[in-house]
Image 1 (cartoon, one colour):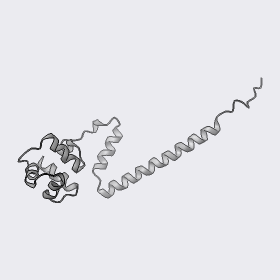
Image 2: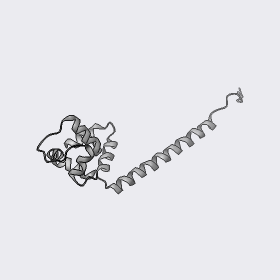
Image 3: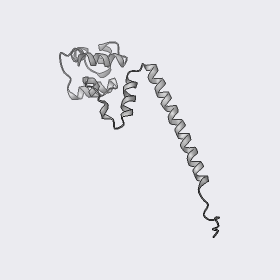
Image 4: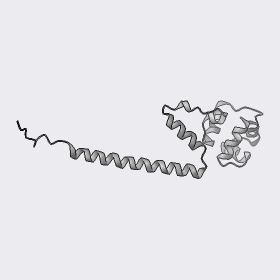
Length: 129
C-alpha cells in the first residue's frame, strides 16, 4: 500500500506527510509508518484516511477497479476514460455531460408538451357512419 497511499495523498493536494497527518489527527511518525508500509492501519483508520483523501477503501488498498462492476458497459468505458483525464479534462467532461443532460431535459419537456396537444379530444369528435 506504500505507493498507493503516497500517490493518493499527493493527488489530494497534500504535499507533505506531516501536513496530512495533522489533518487526520495522527502523529506524523504514525502516518509515516503507514505510508512506508512499516505498519498497517486498522479498519477504522483506513476509513478515516480514505474519507480524508476522497477515495474508496479499494483505491486506498490499491485494488483494481473492474469494468464488470457496472451493469452498463458504456458506463465502465466512460469511467475508465474519465479516470485518465487531467483535472482540466475532467472539468470539461463534467460540463459536457451537464450540457447533454440539460438538452435532454428540454427535449423531454418539449415532447411532453407536444404530446398533450396531440391527444384526441373525445368530447368534440363526431362519428360518421
